[in-house]
Image 1 (tube, rainbow, N blue to C red):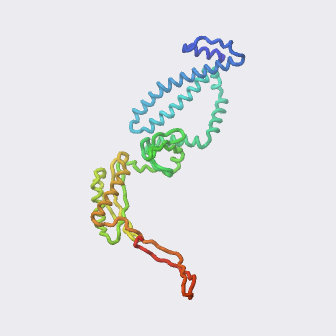
Image 2: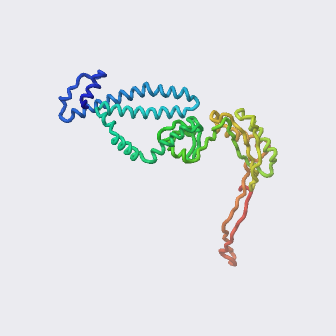
Image 3: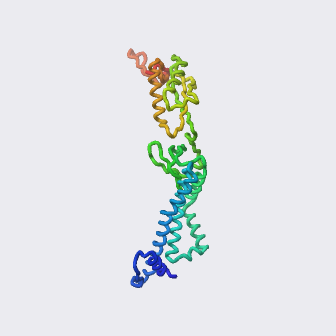
Length: 316
């Protein structure tokens, strides 16, 4: 069947237009118009069928079987959509009357080789990396992840990139290869998350009182877990202060405003230390060095220079 006849067959079948007299077209355009009509109708019908009927059914079935794994659902939708586009293209080729091209194995091999050559190693590597991310049970849509370039919540895993929403509500497209070849951290991947806050007090202060007050401040926030119990400890002796660390746990860290918890804790610590007379973050000592030039007016010495190196700990 020639391309013009195939095009007329598709058009007449769907009843979208009346009979077309291709012989009335200028010479040389008859075959081109027939092939274009066949390709457009064939690809459109297959795409609409797949996009409106087949794809929602596939996503619904996969979602019902993987309720706790939105990553697989998202990836299934992405890859199934790509498959429908590919099938629509094949249907368009058949509709244009060039179906025999698809049976030529040598031509298909050449086309696949060309696609892989043009796509390049980076794109193919990203595609394969995306498949590994989808298959990883510890990597899911909705997880908070941290990598060398930033951190945020995973929104989707696409062919080439993974889309991540940052704390500033920005969407970052991270190449899949970057996530599979570098260290990837899920800081909130468990049911509980430990928060640590560092505090410094002066050597003259009552350290035991400071440790006790830190724990009492922690317990005033209902968002903080009572078990494991919060604690505080000495972590270092600095030049002019003693370093303390407060530790407490949060449940469901993805559902808690961690920034607000930290800020609230720091405000309460400052207020409590002021009440009990503890010095929070005393000034550190500073080394001062340089050259001092002395001019003697009586004429005995002029322009004498000496090096000065002294340490001041009064914060002035």
